[in-house]
Amino acid sequence: MPDVFADLVGQPEAVDTLRRAALAAAETVRAAAALRDGGTAEATPAGGDPSAGGDPAGGGDPALGAGSAMTHAWIFTGPPGSGRSVAARAFAAALQCLRGTGCGECAGCHTTLTGTNADVRFVVPEGLSIGVSEMRALVLRAASTPTGGRWQVLVIEDADRLTEAAGNALLKAIEEPPPRTVFLLCTPSTHPDDISVTIRSRCRLVALVQPPAEAVAAVLRDRDGIAPDVAAWAAAASQGHVGRARRLARDPDARKRREAVLAVPRRLTSVGACFDAASTLIEAAEAEAAAAVAEADTTERSALETALGAGGTGRGAAGAIRGAAGQLKDLERRQKSRATRAQRDALDRALVDLAGFYRDVLTVAMRAPVTPVHTDVATMTASAAGKWTAESTLRRLEAVLSCRTAIETNVKPRIAVEAMMLALWRG
Image (cartoon, rainbow, N blue to C red):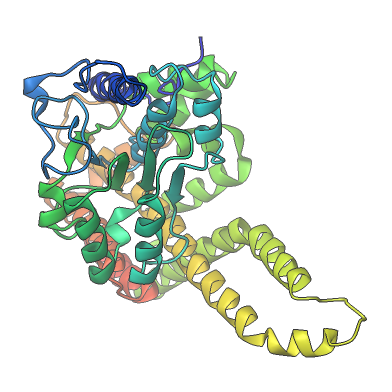
């Protein structure tokens, strides 16, 4: 039987928590409907569990109070690829499920998973941040009465990109939640750099873990029909990231980009080679990002020009196009921001692969009984472990992680990558 949580790989504890919350939410809806129809049902959710904690803010629907398995604000955290947005989307579908179980078959589940449910809004920032004006508009819309009689759900897939002002606007809504409105936030962690302490204190936390490689391989093998050996390799190489594992297994270009990244340590033979390697890595990320956003950019611009009267021959058509310059400029600004985000995401994937290589070298040098990430470059890993000391390998690994941190804090990617390459060469 289909299930909205089927794509959430290797997270049994999180799935159990969300199932109980969905059942409690369904009972809240049922009890409210009974009272509205003149019944006497108590508006206390089923599945209540005192150990699950109550509503941190104490607002919103009175049925979502202390001892309830359900509350109005949630934070999903976990490492990249753990399924933060998958969990939030699945939970949103379970809340809209007409059977209250997240069956995956009813109209509520189907429309939510496909993004067409009128009561569920997904915030997937294309740029580097989520602004206050966008957040205020979303909060205002989320405060309306659910058209389907269940819940208004606002899913913010990258809540760590909220600006300070946008975070404050969201905080006010979470502190004084409208009845039947649920906020689902996804962040890498609960560190203040990712989500404000005050927002965190008013939300229930669902901590996801990195799925084991065996679970990822099983999904690729059983659901996607990928050969067992390829699935096992891709699962290990992706370091538990289901989406990336699927790309590596299916996309030859993705495999070539990974191979180019893993060849970097061999290329660092001089200062000049370091700068060449940095340029190659940056240009590869730019090319990957450009390919990823090109189709969307073209479609958006064509749709906007058509809406503004492009190609029209009637009276005023030329004037309408001239007057649309501001809207076209705004579209170009948003597309540029999206391209920058895509470039940084592509570069980060490359850095994760590079960090995995140095991690493997360190584990070989220390003879640690752990499974390697990059099984297909075992010879190069063993050679590096024989030449480098464990201390120098650890410094190299730290250089890669420091580069990721620098880029996250808006250091120019080229500067950060060049500094990293020099540190890798020096050891």
